[in-house]
Length: 316
Image (cartoon, rainbow, N blue to C red):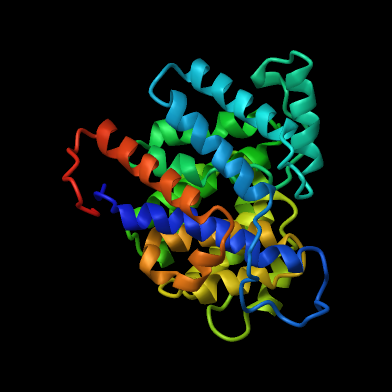
């Protein structure tokens, strides 16, 4: 396990929000967007429910992460309900997440609120903070990613997707060889869902050069968890040192482009750090200061949990 830098944490949080905002205009538009391929961030740039739910999960971790597992899951459920009832929840939230929140509000226990048949990507899009908070503790990372996903989605592919994003972000903090990440993911999360495993193996067989979009089409449209993770990971391993190229590829897929670019942006941002992101994109993104503060709090919590003292102005 490496000692991740604050710059990597800021890269991950900014990275997911920017990817989300970059992909949102293209979401569901098919092969030809009205304004052509997405290549630049709007100004101002608004993120979607993907980032909103990621931030809700981050708040729950910061509030209750070192308490019991039950206390943490209850905090996650409460944060999701608060988000679901918020006036800010106007970014086309996922139907599965909203149904589960309705069940929570009606009194369902967190472990029973999720929609059993849904394998949508609403889990994978939001678990990057779990990878940041539990970096270096794979057992807790798996348990929290799985159960925080179970609150809204019950299908094993959705649970695998939630685990996958957290795991890949954690490995990105270690600067793991990107070419090894798919195999490592299968070792870590494999066996939970056959469809998930098959999609990751399919992704491993794709070429890493040339136009990514034809190859992305073979992986699906990203609406379900196994497709979203495979697409995001493919976008990252093609251009692991280039955040912009990674999220632009994700933002231009035919389908759930904001979720794919959000996941890819979290992985690439954690791997490359904040300095790899276009500074003007960080300025344009909604709630830029708040996003940076969340990243700093997650990094401080990680240092505290691992008994690494703060060094004042040190950015490591």
